[in-house]
Length: 180
Ligand code: CO
Image (cartoon, rainbow, N blue to C red; front, side, top):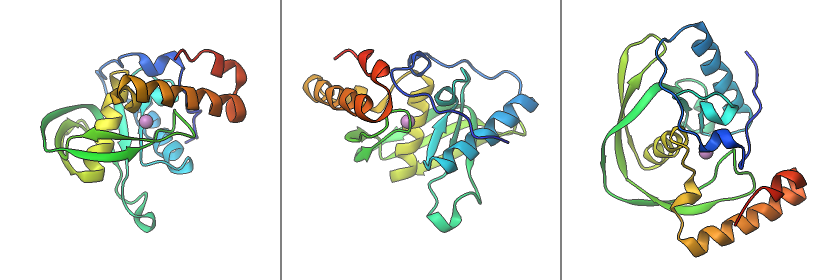
């Protein structure tokens, strides 16, 4: 097991639609374990495979309180939202967009279908925070980032602030690649 490098926006892989997983082999098992380790270390409550540079539809989620973290994480292969209802506004952040957060609107409840590492079909029902995280991570697999939902003006302001954050804390070259 190892912690993998988290790709930071505007890395191109974050804008690509990830590919379906056809075979849950040992490399997928290794990837899932590494993603969990990377998520816990960050720390974060969700991670999509393209955030660690792997173009495949796999997400990990753990929204348990701190003392229970790691006991029962969600690992979902090829997750699909099959039902959604209600609305909730949540202040989100993202490990691939460091230093930032913003309020976005999501569905309050979602039903997600996918497969576990034993190739069993699983259904996860999420409300509130769990629903928000599932939507956020599945968006990642489609190349969508949470700030895409902001109005044009808010998004412009968000990206300007992010560019400044990257320049000051992460990487000046990367900051130059952000177009507002
Ligand atoms: Co994210």
